[in-house]
Image 1 (tube, rainbow, N blue to C red):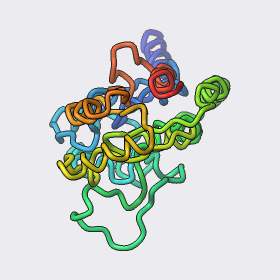
Image 2 (cartoon, one colour):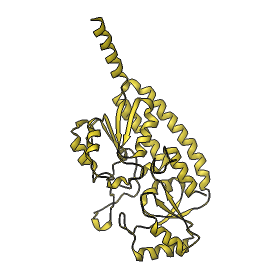
Image 3 (cartoon, helix red, strand yellow):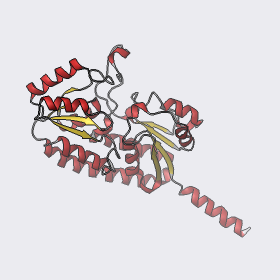
Image 4 (cartoon, helix red, strand yellow):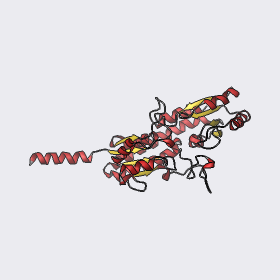
Length: 294
């Protein structure tokens, strides 16, 4: 009886200190959960840092991971609509369905840029009528998401509320101080061309002028006529850099650079682990600041 009581006590103790199992759709979200949750969470991202989260395949391994999850954190705004609903359905985990206690949709807690009013058709390309879903590249937006993650973790694990609040406050303070330092590198007007509208929130945060994108429409590969127009803009607007996200082909950007030699092509990661040395959100933003800023 004494042994049973000891085991029972240990069992309760282990349960009380078990980590919250969190699955995120992107590595940026995963790192943010780690920043807030620390040792009290176990986090894994479905999408790798080198992958485009628009186009993941709904793998059985994802379904299994979600079946064991206490919390799912997704981007939303249509980013994962091609694969995530299938994975959630297959997991048979009712707690992580959208609208339930175990699912946080990050786009619900931030105001989105580039919202589309009126009817949207496929002829417009891969348009997100809810707004641009790449807000995790805007440091100020990420602070808002971190606050929501703190609240969600607390609701699932009230016992560790103080630890989650400490994690958030430490993250917020570090990000705020870093932002002040990073913004000093953008004192001069900077004009760029991008491949896709992935860095819209980063540009908005630091006052970068994104003159145009290499895609004629979202998700549509560059056409010859569009490239000619881009080259003309690069010359007239005195653009110095073309920014290509790491999961896109840089061939077209190099073609433009060949026509206008003063233009520098920068291939940049847009997610944690998109490059070996980019292992958290701070090193990600630092990398982008150094490559895009002056």
